[in-house]
Length: 238
Image (cartoon, rainbow, N blue to C red; front, side, top):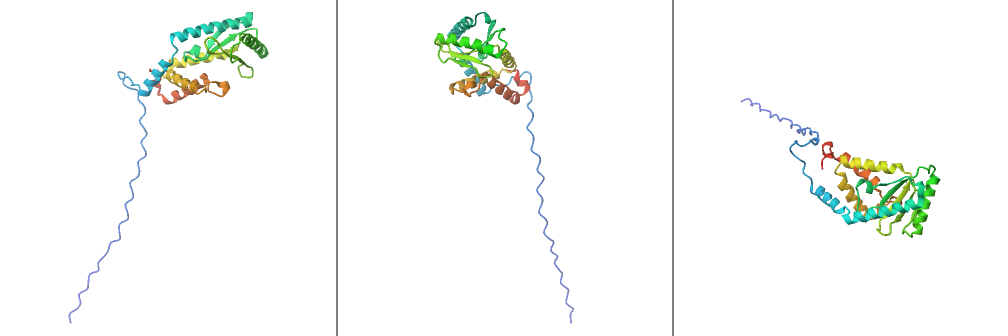
């Protein structure tokens, strides 16, 4: 008998485990904004050029400026006639003082009356201005006595411009100085402000006493937005 030859056992290797995916690299942060080389000027965008052009078109013409100056002179005479010796000085504030002026912008006047120490005395002076304006039949005449800063508001009849008059409001000139300083530091502020003021005026949303956005509130919002968006090296460039 021949001995049976033993058969070889086939060894099957276990399947290899699946490969794990490679670790994900963390997202790359955007590179920081770097100032351009000294010989390279940043190019303005098309939107910037359009806003600058819009601000130029929105400026009052020479004839409109002359009409505004004549209206300011007539309002000044009215205030002097109403208050007499109680008036020390009168100053323009707001857009007439800062240069952020549209052809339809109001005439804002603050009257200094050193003798009016008490709020009731201020209201009395404003009532005198109101009474004289009423005698002259000026349209849309209102004494806003309940506001934080009481004013007399009316339409100057020959020019059709709105007029706001307050008495002893030191913040009026301080805020105008703040706006002028910011315009000198951030040139991009001016075209943006004029474009937004024009849009608000066309929508009748520019009167704070009617729930709209006044010029100083708009200025504060636009300035803060530009301070966040613009890198420091661009704030002083035109």
